[in-house]
Image 1 (cartoon, rainbow, N blue to C red):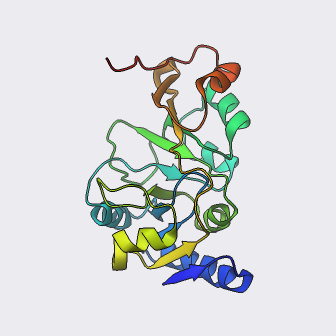
Image 2 (cartoon, one colour):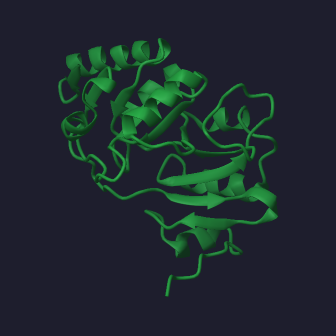
Length: 214
């Protein structure tokens, strides 16, 4: 079901439907501040598997959270550099890779004890996340296809594998988030994205930038 969130009444129905769908383990598509995402309850292994099956690939899935405080409950100690980056760029287009708490009962596809976490700057996504808790979210597209910039585009690719589509209009800036690892005492950019290196270095001067491909 696709809900047009430009209508307040339909937005309320759509958000409620998305929260209910995530709770029962179904997949939803919602807008974020970068691209549309396909999401599932991060703690339901079968839902994360369904997400990867819908995309047609199996790779570790990032997690979106609805508040900064949620991060503290997910990590095994948060380095000061990570706190500084979160304070500067959350909510927004920054994904940080951290060591997750070993007590967490989830399987996001990574076996190295780390998780990529982001708090998106989009009111619809935040409204859903604040009720569902942490969600495993990837770009709403089939593997090898361009990321969807609307829920309607996502539905063309993902079809009935998703229960609820929240249409929030075209993404304002369809650019992937910047990914930074703060694991092992290093602060390393894993993927360049929406946040310029110069801005990141204003917060953490010793960030390691990947060498350009020759």
